[in-house]
Image (cartoon, rainbow, N blue to C red; front, top):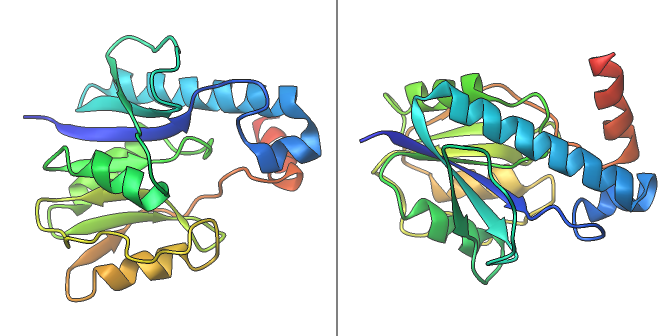
Length: 191
């Protein structure tokens, strides 16, 4: 059985994605960024062939054409921790990642799964104190996220507290794109 990587994302729709970024660069530019980054990531992961690729989308049952070899699941209801827990419980060895980290790709997911050879959980830390990836083996706490303060500089520390007494590992630290400054840095890095 292959390992599974889940990409958590909103269905690309004008006015519903990257809202904080959209307030600074406009809804259309935010939508273009979100759609392009999501599709590039899904294609890269699927082309790797080393793991099953699943995209967990919200809103549930909203239409979106997926690249070949990508399966869709709905995120369901609840806060971010509840929705991520539900998706992660479906698989024995699994990585879950966001879709707004342009530098992330299949190589990072492979590194996370290699890390599970010695760790119960592997994290991809974000520069803002959160994390862009969590990979889990079969040994995991019953409550994965506790009272994690999502979208704050405490998200990683709060989640790590749930894994106290378990072996954890880390892959490279990356930046997500949440602000106009992040977006312009991303554009400059591509030039």
